[in-house]
Image (cartoon, rainbow, N blue to C red; front, side, top):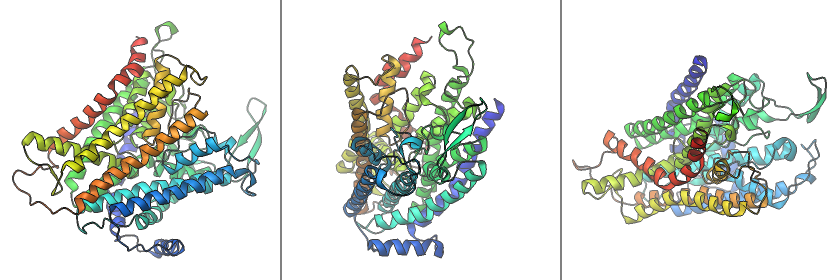
Length: 561
């Protein structure tokens, strides 16, 4: 037990320590002052020339929004048609897998474009190597790059240095992929390969097992995809069991490397904000708030998984660790810590089955995704947190009787309305989707648990889709037209509307005149503002989701006492 907690502390400590210099580097990438080596500039110039992009052209927030949406529409259609045509692509398909049906292809294409990777399929039986690498792995780069690029645009808009010009999405997308994601993915892929993560093109092999039987075992080029799935908070597994599969995550060392990768970039982008805007104290405050809530959620989840086994009185078993759905090479502590990490960062990869977690531990994972801003997905996590900052600044301004201002710019009705709509959108998507699933469940055969846990399964699926997370309570039969279409729509709205709203706020602030600081100005670096911001995050989540949590995980917990 003590060694497991030490392992968790080492993972978190290394991720937090490495995120500071990485945040400084990312700030330089956004400003164009780092990564001057030819290993970066040559491929960037080739991409810009091929795509006929002028990386120096300045754009306002509307032009950047159109660029971001048009690029992602192109990514979607390319992925969708490649999935449909998988069966006729003549190479990297040793299993001769057929093309996908349109509805599952729609869900998978949307899922990877939106950085969600909600997988209603098993990679080893449904996706050819070409699909895994050229479609899914490629989308894991550009979807993560999209989030980082938009975060860079937000920083530029908040800095107010260049008026309506808040940067160039295309330039930031390419630089994010080439200078940030690619080198980190190469390093992690090499490390995972040394740990034993498979990376070959051998196809399905027949092996002689210890039970003296012959069994077909799927391999494949998994290490490159695992690296970017973790670093880009994508989470999509090469195999159906994701990082619980020994070919993806062989041992405790690989588990530590992957968990560090999950946390690294989301943490670094918080510090990148401080370096870019020269507000390091504010960045440290924001990081402290996120970390306080993250560690509190970790403590609850770890405590529940360590002591929550055999919690049903009728079982006749003594209480102890909850080992159901856990890999023994990791144990309950590392599994619970991974679960909180993956739901805090919108990563979605799993090294244990979340459906088997205790009721309160599962409730913590839901609450993580309800908030959707504790580190969060690469780029968009900080963007979601920024929306809470805007709301907290407005409330603080009302409390002291002043017109609220943020970074020297007045927040007016337009910005507050946009922030409020973004905050309301998240629970609207989740709760309306869950209500629709509850109505449909009586006529469908995909719900094995009609009680409290079944409600949690349906709510988790829509929460994961809206938060662009991708993990699931896998007791739910989700590869159906209803779930594929419903979650596909939720993923689209949950991804792009929360990006467009803050981008519009940044665009509006960028053209406003700076307000000189005075003794009455709100200092967002202060502990008082930090307390207000924390309260806003918790109160918004509580007001929106507590009734749903009471019907699901909380009711399930009390039913086992």
